[in-house]
Amino acid sequence: MARVLYLTQVLPYPLNTGARVRQYYVLRQLARKHDVTLVAFVRADDKPEHVSHLKGLCSEVYTVPMQRSRARDARAAIKGLITAQPIVIVRDEVAAMAQLIDRLLADERYDVIQADQVAMAQYGLRGRGLKRVLDLHNAMYLVSERLAQNQTNPVMRLIAQREARALAKYEAALCAKYDRVVFVTAEDRSLIEQQIDRFGVQVDRARFSTIPICVDPTDKRVIAPVDRPFRVTALGVMFWPPNAEGVAWFAEEIWPRVQAAQPAAVLTVVGKNPPDYLTRLNGQNHIEVTGFVPDVHRLLAETAVFIVPLRAGGGMRVKILDTWCNKHRRLGQKAVDVG
Image (cartoon, rainbow, N blue to C red; front, side, top):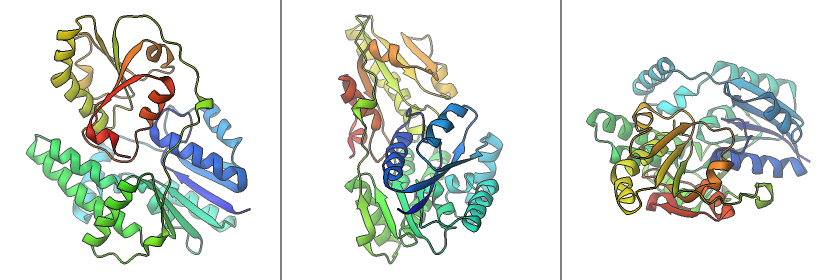
């Protein structure tokens, strides 16, 4: 039995985002055979009972508050631009997290340190002398690259292009610093390998593995459909730009055609912290923007069609796996079906 220090950028429970689903099932599988200590960032809406649930899987659970603000994001952007580092990596530099990991590494004996997603890779590198595992999930640089392609503001397009290049270089370099690198799809692995070649990084690719995201249907509540007016639902964290921008595109380009064909149709946008340009759509043209909904089962029961209108992204869309479990009709775009 190995002792594993497992680092996550979000608390891996409840299972309401794709990242959490990935983290939770990996964590649960690891905990069946190994002694796992979880270290995770937490937000204001993470509840003690969520931590308690994870303590049922892990030997120890430690948390560090993640404070986000526009001022913090602005400082990260300035520092990233000056230092040529990816802005999203600078943004997640938190002294309290580094200090906690250093203390645990000094006080305890671990065999493996596993960093989940590129944001936690900087902390995983603190585990000198340990076997180091990085679960990249997907090629993050591709998100910024596709956002740049869809960006109409020339300044924002330049920033996104710069971020894409910085992330591509950063992700490629990380692969040489970890003993094992895991991807969720062969496509993401190939994309990172292209950047390894692009930047001339020397790395043994035999250390790469591809492990897809899985869901356990037995963990899902059965959703009985309700006979209600035609509802189209988009679900996801709306502070994530690919989700929000995809919904805005759908509302502008596709929704008028749906309304013309089915005047009673309702578009329901569900997800935490939608930007202003989405909230302004609420109440217009049979569009509902709900923000965060603690229990989405009623809305899903009333859903005739589930949409995933992403124009940027990589990895796998866990929400698509969920729609299969719920037997919903699903509409998406080419970017959605990667993986």
